[in-house]
Structure formats: structure tokens, C-alpha cells
Image (tube, rainbow, N blue to C red; front, side, top):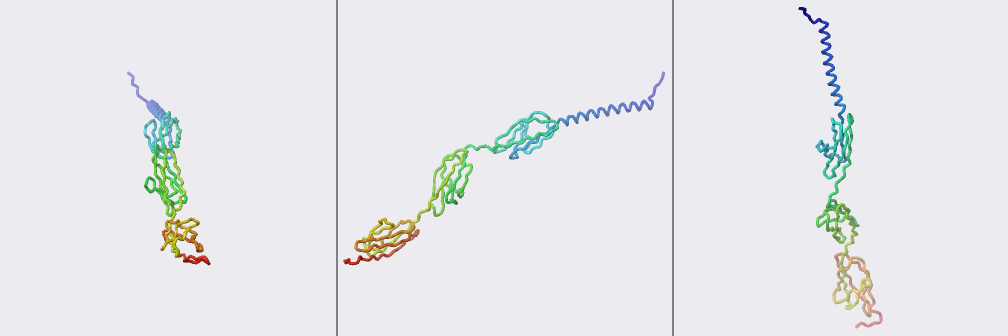
Length: 264
């Protein structure tokens, strides 16, 4: 029987054959893996304002700005949610290799049942009270006011207080402008006249007859007046008076008889 043995040459051929098979297997696997990586893309999702929660096919992924990598090509639904803003949604197609950018401008929600009040006055700087509560000085903008009737009061030193009831509508601004009126102040006039029953006039308007003792005119608006006192057989007395707030102005009147008349 003949025996055969592998020569060194045969061993070398066998080694190269096995090495080639191993190398080809490795290259094929590597190429397949690289091809798979090349197919993967990405999504970059942002919003204005930022901080919105991102849902990809209803699965939470994070908050904007969000860079999603290793996204398989295909169609996806995106939904953004941020408190105080309307939800935003769209459909996007992820592409191989590329990063697809998505940016959303979020729209604020309209708060139902709330409105605004804009209050101003002339002069400005008046205290403002809303339903009995102090809220600031004019000019003033009040936000998120419940709809319905509200009482507004304005107060400013040396001016009359102002108050009114307004109606606030949802998602609307009720504008209020108030022309404040100077506060009227009052004083008194005390007239001492030696003659009784003389007629007293202020700025041409009859006020009273003089009497024994002082004749007091009360609740006179602060300001200047022309005082005229008339009595038969006496010359009219005319003088200018100034009335001060919360004070009594006094005047002594001595009437002069008309010449040629005899007084009894």
C-alpha cells in the first residue's frame, strides 16, 4: 500500500486557502455592518420657546432642543408639548446619512374666562382699587382678570374720588380713562357790620341780611369774591375777599351814611 504525506508545499497552499476564506468572511461582515450604519440618519428637533417635550411616534424622547441620532429611515410623527402653549405636531421623513432638522413656533393658548383692564387718568399717579383691593397707580395694565363685573376706584390727593363698575370680557381688554376733578374745598366768611338788615352780596348773588353780631356765610368754595353790602340811606360797601380752605375769613364793615340824610 502506498502512503501519501503532505509536503511543505501542500501545507502552504492549505494555509493560504483557509486564510483567504477567513479574510473574505471578515470583509463581508464588515461591509454589511458599514452598509447598515450608512443607512441610519438623524433628527434635530427645536422649538420657540424651547423646553417643549418631544414625542416621536408617541414615545417621549426628551426636550427641545433635541438631537436624535441613529434614526432608521422612514416616516415618523412628531408632537411637541409645552405648558401654556398649544400642542404642535407634524410628520417627518428620516433620510439615510442626513440629519433632518425640524423647528416649531409654538402658539400660546388663549386662556378662556380671562380678560384685561387698561386704566389711565388725568392727572396720572392715582391709586387704583379693583373690587376694593389696591392694585397700583395709573397708568396701569391688569392681566388675567376674571370675566364679569368689577368695581374700579381711583383716588388722588386734592381730587374727587372716582368709582365705576365695568364689564370684562374673555380675551379682550377693557380700557378705562378717567378725567379726575379737582376737589372743592370750602371756607367761611364772618361779617361784622354796625348796621343791621343790610343786604349782603357775593359776586352779585344775594346771601343774607346782616344782624346783630357776626353774620357768618358757610360752605363757600375756596377762591376770590367781591363782597357788596347795601342798605338804604348808606353808601354801598364794596371790597374783595379771599376764602381759604377750612378757615374763617373775618371782615369788619363800617357803612357811611349818604350825605344830607339824618339818621335816627
